[in-house]
Image 1 (cartoon, each protein chain N blue to C red):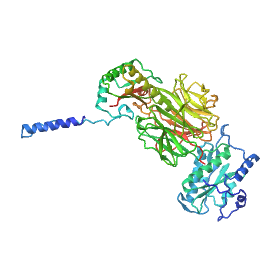
Image 2 (image 1 turned 30 degrees about the vertical axis):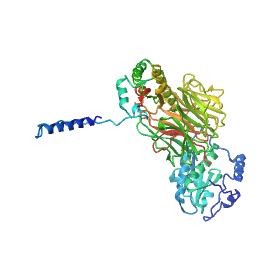
Image 3 (image 1 turned 120 degrees about the vertical axis):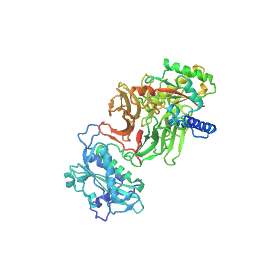
Image 4 (image 1 turned 180 degrees about the horizontal axis):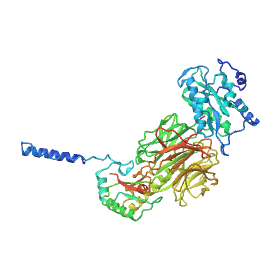
Length: 465
Length: 171
């Protein structure tokens, strides 16, 4: 995405712009805009209004009307007036899905004229009960790109809180909506963004004893969905690279359980680890230079590390139990994994070189599939006990265990990049059919992610640049 | 196989009739019974192998091609030892036969752990067979974790059926 550098000062003049004049927005990534944004925050205008973990009394009412356009132009992404409606829908869907916002119903959203974008009708919006207002505009540029303006207003104090603009190619038009939603969300919660992201997962179909499993990728809201394998071999546990350019996964192709890397740019697939042993459970290092994986030699499964470009695996664990599911802390200094060396599946943490392996789970259940939060402060897991599989979190020392879901078969948590939302899969008792679900750290906002087929083994990618 | 035989019989009957008499018989031979042939199931429910005459023979002649395991366990119990003894005897008598052992788990375990546990089960069976005289280099192993259940219910009976190691003849 390109960000032409425009100074913040021009915007003040443009607030009384006529219909023909497009108010040029400042571009968030420009040094001036960033400096001014942090200055505003320090002055107290930037206090977060939603405490995401401390307990929310009620979601915030927010108005997100259709974005007008300076001129109705047909583009490869569609007509700019239609895009304005769809972008508002994307932002509405993202913010509602977080569980922290209640969008004002469509019937109460008035048509916003182009000049009104920078001169909001605060009294009207106050009358709808909205506390915040999101406005924007869509403009087709002569070079074929689209500009999407994104403004956030505090309705009660009648103050502008966010002003950003995103220049995108027509193929990326949805990302402008997600970027805007991220700006709104971050400003109001103080949390990091997570809407402009993709999820890789396994798309499933077919009878329970002969499931067809395909590698798939999609935007976190389910759009832009693509199947990446044809389902002829069982594929499991995909993981999107921190660099977003490749996917690690395990495949049973040719009856050889091996680790593959799928390159998203070239669409080429290569085998990273393949030998006569069982190889599975691959994870990227935070810098994408290494891959952790599990290998079973002589019926004993341990955790190994191999360069992402290939080479000889280096052994990190050596216990007679099953050691698997190893993945890094976000700073790369530690690894969390699961092991049954003590008799039952429990969580362990060790240094990245394999030293100081110590157990951290003591909550009375069996624990598996650990995932270290991108914020470093928590480890998510699958807890088995009492006939149920539940998603939970604990801190890296093992304390503060909290269960976030309560269902028959919830498994395989993966963190959104802001460390506040988790995606996992939920299987139905009997049919065994899985679907993808998200839950936030309060455990209250649980929702299903729409997929064309059933879904399992989700992995949430980093925010796209 | 099943479909072929009735046709042959019909053909033989027609030839016999034509040779014996020029008049149509009083009673036509009974029409062949329509025996639906089940679609070919992958042997052992895994991905590997089609049924071969040798593998069919193996399944007929041993006590069972499958042993079962207790929850979260991979040790070969008394009943399983009996089954594997029967398999070992057959395999020793057919020294050119190669086999694969598939290890499987029930759905009440997590994805990755079950891959490892299935591998343990396959290897437990392999080690036992090797100890009974079946050379280890005739045996490969593969784990399907919980990916290929044979019973589709979500109850104890189904889970017990799915915790298994299946011996497949490869040639």
